[in-house]
Image 1 (cartoon, rainbow, N blue to C red):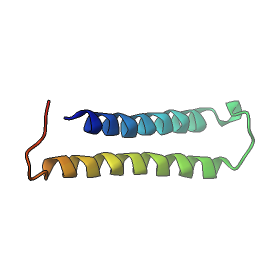
Image 2 (cartoon, rainbow, N blue to C red):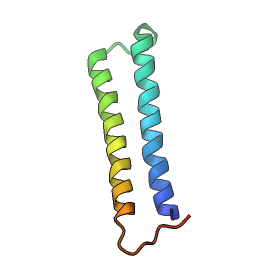
Image 3 (cartoon, rainbow, N blue to C red):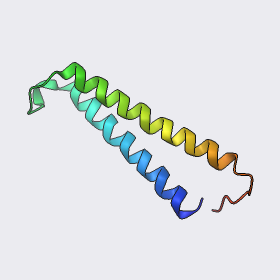
Length: 74
C-alpha cells in the first residue's frame, strides 16, 4: 500500500475502534457516563459511526483491488 492508502486505512480503523470503545462503555455501564442524554441516541450514533468506518474500509479495499494500474505497493 502506498502512504495515502495506509493513512486512509489507519483513519477508518481509528474511527471504528473509537466508536466501538464508546459503544462498549455505553452498553456496559451507562451510569458511568457523565452527561445524561438520551442513551439510545448515543448507542445508535456509535453504531452509525462503526458502520460508516467499515463502509470506508470496504470502499477503499475495492478501489485498491480494482486499481487498473496495479500500483499496489507494499
